[in-house]
Length: 464
Image 1 (cartoon, rainbow, N blue to C red):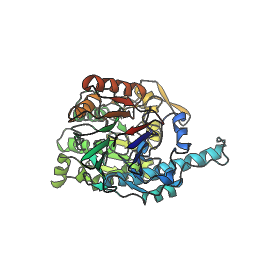
Image 2 (image 1 turned 90 degrees about the vertical axis):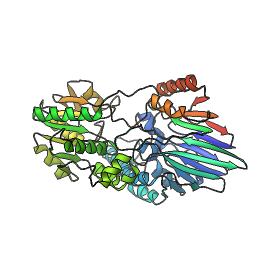
Image 3 (image 1 turned 60 degrees about the vertical axis):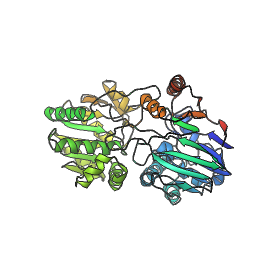
Image 4 (image 1 turned 180 degrees about the horizontal axis):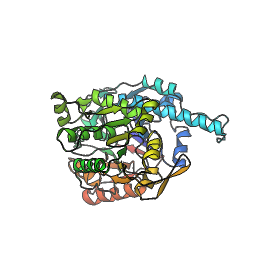
C-alpha cells in the first residue's frame, strides 16, 4: 500500500506539494510557494505537516515558483535529501530560487523600515544563502532516464511541454508479477508550441494526479505570428515604442524567437529590441544551453547556424543605467520587460514613461489576473496606480492570447483519450474550484472515470 496526501495546489492553483509514502520512502512531489491572496501567502509560514528532516527525496515537475519556491524553507527546516528533476529545471531553479530569496529579504527589510510587521524584527521566509545551499542537493536526470529509488521503484521524467525542463513524473512500482504506475502531470503544455516539444503521450496509469488550471476554458484560435507582426508594424507606423510586459522564463524567449523569424522573412523591419530584465537575460542563456530539449524545428534551425533567440538588433539591458537609457528611445523600438502582469520590476518604470503617450503601444502576451495592474490596463481604465500615483493610459493597448503555456480542457481530454485503461482514481489539483469542477464533470461524462477534486490535507490509500 501507499499513501498520497495533498498539502498544496488543492482547492487552489498555487503551492504545489504532494506527499507520497511508498515502500517505506517519503517522497514530496513539488515544493512550491502559495501565491496570490494574503490568506494563501500566509500558508507559506505554517509548519509543513511532515517533519522536513524525515522526507527522503523531492521530485520536481518544473521550475515555476509555485512548484519549487518552498524548497529553501524546507531545507532551512531540516530537509537534507536529494532533489530530482530535469537538467533544464535545475538550471532555471538556480536563478528563480535566488530571485525569490532576494524578494523575501527585500520584503522583510521594507517591513522593518516601515514598522508594518507584528514581528520584531520581520524575517524573510528564507535567505539567499538558504537558496544557494539547497541547490547543492539537486541531482538532475535526463528526460526518459530511469531513476531507481530501490529495487522495486522506478521514477521517470517525461516531457510535459509548458516551459523548458517541465515534466510529468511517472512512478512505477514492481511487486512480483504486478506493476502499478502513478503519474503526476505537473503543468501540462500545449501541442504544436513555438519552441517547446509536445507533451509526451502516456498510455498506462493506475493513479493519475492531473492539473486543472484551464479545466473550464478553451484557448482562442489565432495566428500568433501574424498577430505579432501586425502589432509591431502598426506600432512602427504610429512612430512610437512598443512595450511588452512578459514573464522572464519562457514568454520572453518565445517572443524573441518569433521576432527573429519575422525579421528574416521580411514580415517586419529590423528595429532595436531591448530586453530589460536581468532574470530574462539569464533565462535566455539557459534556453540557449538547452536547445536539445526544445522541439525539432528549433533544433534544426540551430544546426543551420541560426541564433534562434537573437533578432538582428537585440540589446540586453542588465544594469540600472542601461535600463534608464531606454527612456531616451522615442520611436521604432521594442522594449520587453518583466513582470508579465505589471506587478513589479522594471516594467513599472517603462509604464510610467510610455503609457501617457498616444504614439506608444503596450502589448500583453499573457493572462492578466484579477487585481493586477495588467488587468486594470487591459480592461480599458483611464489611469493606473503605480508607486502610489495615478498615470493616464493613453497608449494603444493590445493583447495576443496565443502564448498560453497551459493545456485547455480539450487538450487535456485529448491526452486522456489515449490511455489504454481507466486509472483506478484520478485526482484533480492546480485549479480554482470552478475550473476543477468543470474538468471533473467533463472527464466523468466523456470517460466515466472515478475523479476526485483534491482538498488540502486529504490523504488516500493507494493499492500499490
